[in-house]
Every structure is written in C-alpha cells, then in structure tokens.
Length: 267
Image (cartoon, rainbow, N blue to C red; front, side, top):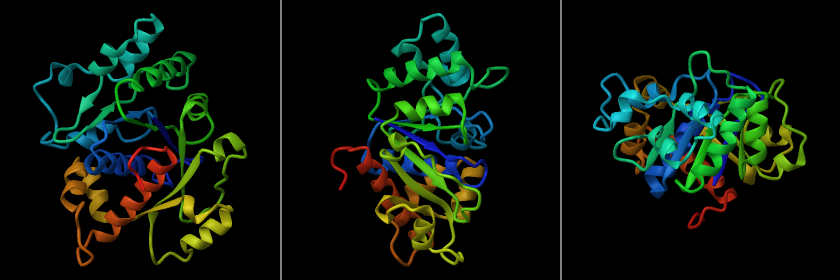
C-alpha cells in the first residue's frame, strides 16, 4: 500500500512533518510495517529526525547503519538493472522499538528529478509492496517529474494544505482527487479560519480532512531527533494532558488516511 504526501506549496503546509507523525502513529499504534521514503532533497534529512544527537533510538549493530547510502545506492543499482529486494532492505533503516523503517533521500550530486531517479522510484515501489504493509512517500512539493510519477502510481495521495489557503491550488486531475485525502498541518484552534471554513474555501468534504494541530513540543522533538519517543510517550494521553489534543487529532487523521487506503482493521 503506497501513500504519497504532497503539497503544491513548499514550506507552508508541513508535508514532511505530517508524514512523520502519521507514519509513526501507523507503526506504533497499529503495529504495521511502515517504510518512509524521502524523495525531497530540500527537506530536513529524515535520518537526522530519527537519529537525534545521541542516536538513542537507532539500531547500531547493523553494518548498513554506518554505510547506508539510501536512495543514492538504490538509484545507482537501478541504472544497472541490479535493484532487488536485498538491496532495498539493506538501504532501509529500522527505528528501534518500532515497525518503522526509512530510506534517506538521495544526496550529493544525485538529481532527484532525473529519468533515472523516476525509474528507480517506480522499481522501488514495486519491491516495497512485497516487503512492508504501508509505504509512505515524502514528495517534493509542486509539480515535478518525480512527484507526478509517484502520485500517479500511489493508492492514496495525502494533500497537505495550509491553514491560510492563500495561493494554494488543488490539482484538477480527477484521478488524483478520487484517491486524495487532505491534511491541515500546523493548525491553530484560534486561527481566524476554522476547519469548516477551510473546507468550504477548498470545496472539499470535512470527512476527508484530517487536522494536525501545531504543537511546539512535537516541533522540538523533531528538531532534537526524538519524534518517535515523543509520540510513544503521549500515545495514551488523557484529556487533561498537555499533548492530548495533538495526539487525538493525529489519531483521527491517521485513521482517515488508512481508511482511504483500505487498510484492514481500521474503522
């Protein structure tokens, strides 16, 4: 099952942060084997988000931890038609104490939007279908060759929209909209626009909209490389707890996305 996270505007819709939160919840709460693939080379490197300063939550015994190349090696192997399940698994990094894995984005002089990269993403998607339960793709925002190709092949497209929907346009392709759900990231309950107003402005159904509130503690956890322990610690928060609204909204948003993906057992 492949789920793409995308927005047409960079830096405003928290696309990467949304995917991280949903992916962690999917893995931790539902015990689904979840792989995150970062294709956006301009985003904060996903390994920094999970490793943290002391690397407390990583598996160090695996030799590939020290030598992994992520998408760089996957793209290089695909050029030679040598990409296989073993190569993919070697370049997947497991986040300790979870069923969550990630593949770092290509770095250095690798072109993210080249034909070689696009072909590698297609091959990777097919191989991941036999490896994991859910694959989440962090896409470059806007219209580009790689994002368009992945969106076309994915089962669900999570379109991140800003709480302030200025100059944000939804795709007019019915194929995309039919498999789309929407996620409002960095939402502030005191915003001048309610979720209902945002839905009306975009012309979308509230049943297909998830909300992830802005939470400074989650933001700091991402910065410190502690997003996983933050969500694990707060996953059973009670109403009186400081992070309850964030976790409860994240739970609801995750269910909207997984239901759209027709994941079994999600109500």
